[in-house]
Image (tube, rainbow, N blue to C red; front, side, top):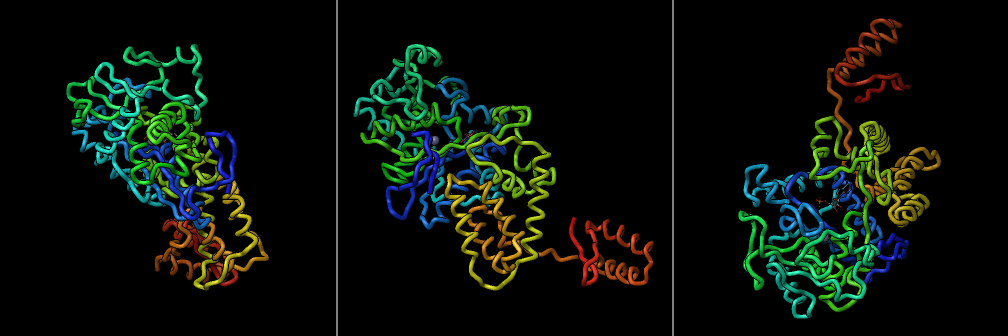
Length: 458
Ligand code: AMP
Ligand code: ZN
């Protein structure tokens, strides 16, 4: 298995710390608003990765955090608290806002066939772990207090910024937002005590004063709590490379005194709009999964759409492209239903080997999907074996082939089709055409087949 490691900028052979179990941490949602379909692309990337690991017979211990505190509107410890902003907008408490969007997020990932994480911790349920973590850093001399906040001192590390290959020259540092409290421009807040907002919705007592944690600390603290000091894989979107993940590495490696904290860093590229515009949670341009459903798309149409492009390439969204994914998925489901059998046969070894090779190559789901179509067309493979092989592929694709059911055609439609068949046998073409139109009104198309007729849902 090979994965592209952002840390080394190379595709590397995957060698986990333990032989049979993989520890995986994926940065989860911030819950001050709905997840948009760009976010969901990221969460599907985590799912493809996890499914590929499971497909290779690894056990996967997966943590995904829920950021319900401490995430500001700017990456540089400035700007408004996003949770508070959401609460003001919706005239709710920050806690109600979090509950609402967590529920909505869970519904979205279920609809997209995303496997549940092993642990799904909320940052606010682990404040003590975060405080303990900061105290550990304090004891080791990596922190200082200024302006009421606790900061991480990045100058204490010799390799700060290695993930993003940060420019730490004088010119590079000059480009970072100025904060008079900071000793070094890249230092970051571990604990805020001087909240900029009088009505700060979430605050806790700590040895550093009453306040709330900085955004990065939750991931280090919760990763170590659930997965141990060192882990195999950590994921997120590419936007996390320069600040969030860079700072997670700094504080984690400082705390454990060992390197590397994470063996493989993997990042998904963005979903972009046709205009080249980035879809952002704080912007107004965002589309949710529910909006797609309202427009007549199923969540799996979107999953199919995402499978078609490598997670490392930007994915251009347009409704035309989604339409084409929808049509292909419908065709695929129809064909799978046609070959579906209850017979237990083994999968085709050659196809399975090729599929494994493709998905093990940095999760080339696009090639995996292409192989599905190749297999369906292949006259040399029997239908029951095709079906068995597709069920294996679906362990990675997650399109739910096993649960597909033939739709029961309403009795009225069958009756009309029978009448049409009789009309055709009597060469009454006018009546046959009229009956075809009537059938169409029920949302079915009728065609001729060697057994008489074939009905299909449009
Ligand atoms: P957020 O809830 O805004 O913190 O974002 C959750 C995840 O979605 C993060 O890992 C982001 O990197 C990722 N993300 C945000 N915008 C996009 C986008 N347009 N396309 C793909 N991933 C995104
Ligand atoms: Zn994180």
